[in-house]
Length: 414
Length: 216
Image (tube, rainbow over all chains, first blue to last red; front, top):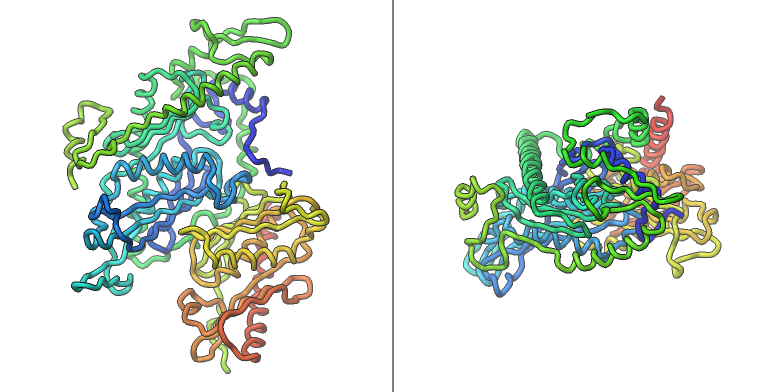
């Protein structure tokens, strides 16, 4: 019986992973700030996009229809974002039911993409107070191997960028929708691309992993999810879990995430451009030419074998260049014996240990951490570009003060 | 009554195990349609769905956009009935078998594409089956010609659509699903055409399974 209602991580798995992290190694052989491969593919329909981040896969489809605008915003179109945790992705996901995870992911995506005004909604207006386009982004998670959010945010943006809506004309009373064959289609105007970048935090911010896998996600003390665009503007911020992370660590991580965001956005734009080029040259398009059909992908079983073959029991010195200084320090942790079968690992300087391996005390600490978790969750701070204000001149949070002038200009530009 | 010459159906393409979570999975493309199928099983099942003497089969058909509607429920029922016939569910009492089909691209004959994908995913998962199943679609256009493997446009304009599912051991019909109006002889002709089509699919199954296990 493989189906479990919730994904449970066994204690030995947890301990193994944490010990491995202390040796500055990751289970899949990545460096701490290394991300998995991102692949973006497009289907034959407009706005249909398949994104895979390592083994995590998300399918996005944008659709549009004409609707009555909201009375508070009569001249703006509507954007819906709907992330669905498909039962194919993991056995515990149920079809058509909102779980805590799906609500959380939907909300973060909405905050990141919708509330940062990435899509120009005013251009979706057909007739003020009467008819506007409503864009709907459906995201289907196909395989859950950790970090759904990053994958979904890229899928949503790529699908929106790829999408073309039909042209409409108005002759006084009637509105005519021209089919794709009749008239050229209209692309969606996107001001900026706020992609989500996720991190998993361990040992109170001493170890920070980029793009956590499923196990890493489940074991982590806290999760940091950042929404960033190419201009280093923070469009969403979410810190869940319970770790006392200092502000400068977060700032450092955010700066690193901004670099990553830039590469992701470049890749996204290039993928869309290449698809456009293919369409212009009347090449064959669609998922039937997807890389998923290439045979080398089907050898998932051998990947583990490859990792195990490359595995060395003797710790290698300075194998990874990206190892941060904190981690090197952390490797000096001295085990202090506390009687039989118990050992408390203490970092050299701090008094209270971030976590201990004692079997007796582990339950206690777990209880206290769950309490902390709920507290922390209640005050999930979310910084956004638009903090609910109606004006176009929204407050812009710039990570790098030097570029401030330039950024504000790009923001006000329509 | 004449046959349309549109019988040079492009061979389907597929790949196994591109999803890591399900017990069996496949991405399958036939014509312009592409679906992903995943199978979980045998798994635990809700008490109200549990059957004492056999495993209960659950299917989900997920459209790529919007929430699943009535049409998708119909697809789910069709696929579930077919899978129940093909599986030896008595081997898995008090447990469940979950088949999930995700539409990726729609380009006609989506039902047969989904059924064939489900069969390959079940094969990949290693759940016991009585026989393999293959579906073929055929449609009757306004002039009375029969078209094998129709495109989405042809299917939309068709007077009638036939979907037949055959089994591999004796070539009997497992399921027949029709829409629209037609004559009895047209039905029989369509049946013949689809049987030929399904033979090609069975050939294809043999080829991919051979390819899967004889890599080295």
